[in-house]
Amino acid sequence: MKTQFLSALTVSAALALAGISTGAVAAESGSLLGTVAPSAQADRTVSLAGGTSKVFVNWGETVNFVAANGQKFTVTFDGARNAFNLQDLVPAGALTHPVNVYGRGNLSSLGA
Image 1 (tube, helix red, strand yellow):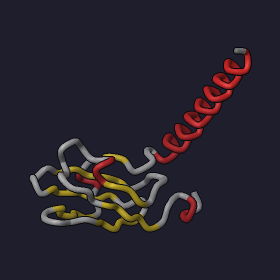
Image 2 (cartoon, rainbow, N blue to C red):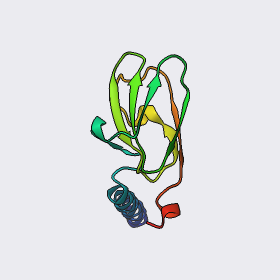
Image 3 (cartoon, one colour):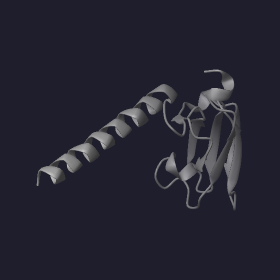
Image 4 (cartoon, rainbow, N blue to C red):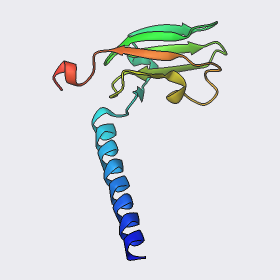
C-alpha cells in the first residue's frame, strides 16, 4: 500500500514538473504554435481555398488567412514548433481539412 502511494506521488510530481516546463516554453513564445494577431499586422495574405494542404512561413511572420468558407484569421508564427496542423490554432470551423504549416527558423536560430 505504501509503495503504491509513493508510486502515485512520484507520477503526480513528474506530471506537475512537465506541466511547469511546458508552461514556461509557452509563456516565452506566446504559444507553442503561434499567436492570433490583428489583421493590420499581416505581412501577406494566403487563400486556403480549394485543396490547399500546406503553407510555408517564416518564424516571426504574420499571415492573414482566408478560408474556403470566407472566414478570415491572422496568425503570427512565433511559437516553438515549426511544423503543425493549422487546424490546431485557428478558430473552430475555420478549416474543413488539414493544412500543414512549415516554418523556417525558430527562437534558437534567431539567437533568442
